[in-house]
Length: 323
Image 1 (cartoon, rainbow, N blue to C red):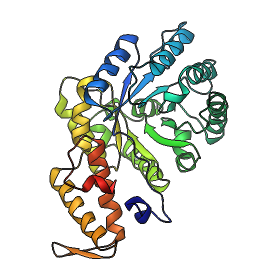
Image 2 (tube, rainbow, N blue to C red):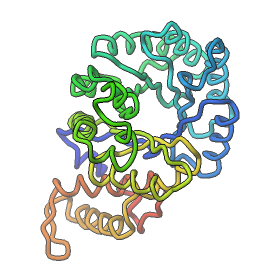
Image 3 (cartoon, one colour):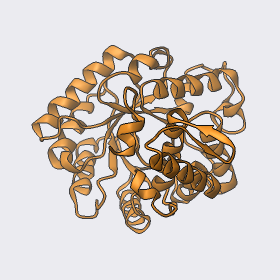
Image 4 (cartoon, one colour):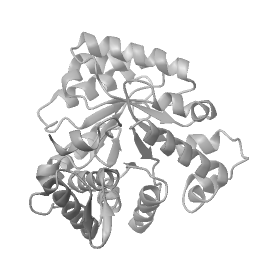
């Protein structure tokens, strides 16, 4: 049996998608992102943005452009998704229908923003499934933006909904929804990692995702010039808040995010040594450097190896056989 079959019997095998989600809205930025993904490989996702990316009055043409770019030969890895308008927008179904008709087979996911309730989300998912099925893709993954009080209140049910792959935190809309009760500096660091209402939202989203085997995606870092801030935000999101993915809003943010979410070389080597020894012992308990390990810890080290590969890190000899 493959390692994943042994280690995840009777439990959720976590969703594994790239740790960086790079947003691009204009045609120029979408094409630039495509070229960068071709250069670096599928170590990061791209989300083409139909919500904030489309100029008012140009929604239909923008959705068509997104579908055409997705279906083009430039989309080599099929790791590009699209953010559509919110479910209450008159352009929501138009976005979904256009993009699915043109590119359902190459679309990595669709993102639904500004979700207000589980009921609203279920209706939106039904619409997506209808158009995706008509285009031959009934199991199209769906990502959800949690940025309202109502969505946060129902986040555990949202994370458990079939078809949902990833939940993202929209910190700026969430802070704004408090109408001044939460200060504006909580939209960025250091306030976003210290204000109780914001950290509570981050933790709740992360916990709900882990409970249902879904991916928790951290909000943007608005700092573009000082990449040390991007690296710090990504490290805190990954190491302290349990997030497995983070948004990028500028190409220069991609590499710091990848580095922050990657295991250290020592962590990767340790994980490989433990898992290879476990496999040699038919996945029974082992001792490694004076410590006991069994399947409970093997699952953890398997995810370390998986993350190392996702972020483009070279794996120790034979470790790739475990993934």
